[in-house]
Image (cartoon, rainbow, N blue to C red):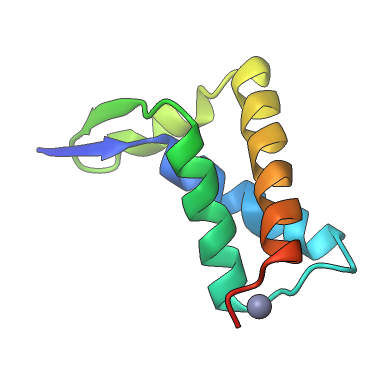
Length: 87
Ligand SMILES: [Zn+2]
């Protein structure tokens, strides 16, 4: 049994997608991780108990409202890192 924050998967996925769509945003691993870390620090974690792949069913259950919230925070992180890249 594993306890995981299921927002992690969703945040990493949306971060990669949104950075790719933003032509002015650096697409390197460092900036991507910084944006994802920002978003995860500003969202309330949602812990689930995962047993052998069950985590994926939970991830699919992210509601539209949750996704919209994650997108808003990720966009905020992109703007911030864009202005202050750590490299
Ligand atoms: Zn970068």
